Amino acid sequence: MTRLDSLDVKRVLWLAAAAALLPACDDGDDGAAVLFSDDFNRSSAGPDWHVSAGTSIAPAQGSPAPGLAMAVSLGDSAQTAHTELSFTARPLTVAVDLDATTGEASGGVEIVTSAHAPLATAERFATPGGDMTFTIGAATQTVSLPSSPGVQKVTFSVDSLGNAAWSLGDTTVLIQPGFPTAPVSIQLFTRSGTTLPGAAFPTFVFDNVVVTSP
Image (cartoon, rainbow, N blue to C red; front, side, top):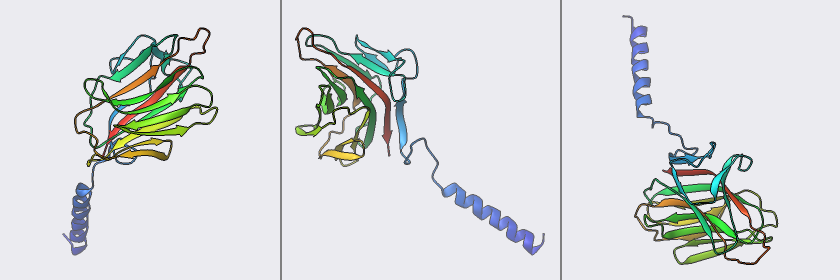
């Protein structure tokens, strides 16, 4: 073997050793591990969700269609869909696309305990010119919405120290420390508190549910 051949072999071995030190790639857009992802591109909610009556796949609605739809009806009614999986609460990021027609009801996303008690909520009110209320524990922040808000991405995140936050689009709207360490699930919901005859009731559509962890 010539001296040049020896240098080439050493260079190959060095490159191989350097490549072995590089971190493996994963499915997250920013290096985060994807724990759960659902775009509802099928005919039913499927085994990943436990859904109540009035919840179905909407083939013509979503971002893009199809999406998971909850049609609100008269009276003090509610629909829910929660993940069958639970997730380690810290650290964690949950993103959901949310849309709604106008009417007398609200709907949104909740981070819940194993007993389905809400720890953090993003609730959109579907009345024209309505708003969106974000809560983490006892902390609350209300954000005014445009008259036709369309599809909105809501994101809940919590770091390893328990600092939790809600974001609407790219804007952080609420930050609160001390989020619990126990496993959590994701719950989508609608609520109707009106019994007015002739009231208009909205349909809420959820899509692109993604759960990641650094």
